[in-house]
Length: 120
Image (cartoon, rainbow, N blue to C red; front, side, top):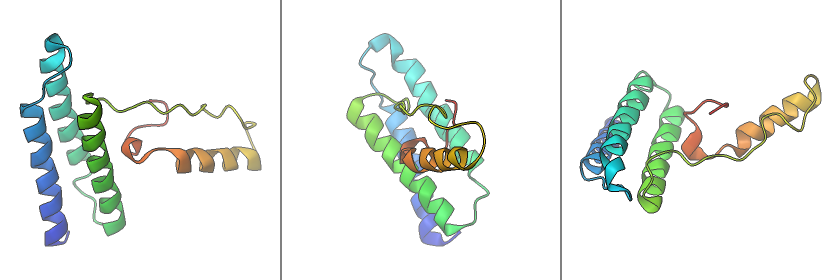
């Protein structure tokens, strides 16, 4: 990993923990659980992506992290925003239509949900 990319990733990691430390929920009783969620989610995702070496993949992960930070701060909600795409509701179960539907779903998935599974 290049030094500038490494510094950028470490900066994002520390930024997430600073945000978690100062996080105030809209409902005071939920503040601690949301702080815990932010810390746990950051640790899981950064450890999951720790072994990445391809610059494009690292760049996509950085973009996802920045997007999730900005959305979380804007909406005062640390949880990922839902995606309202039907789960394979428009295609038959085999053939070209299924492949086209899978490709369209992959392209339509927001950047801030790239690290989550299809069914979440």
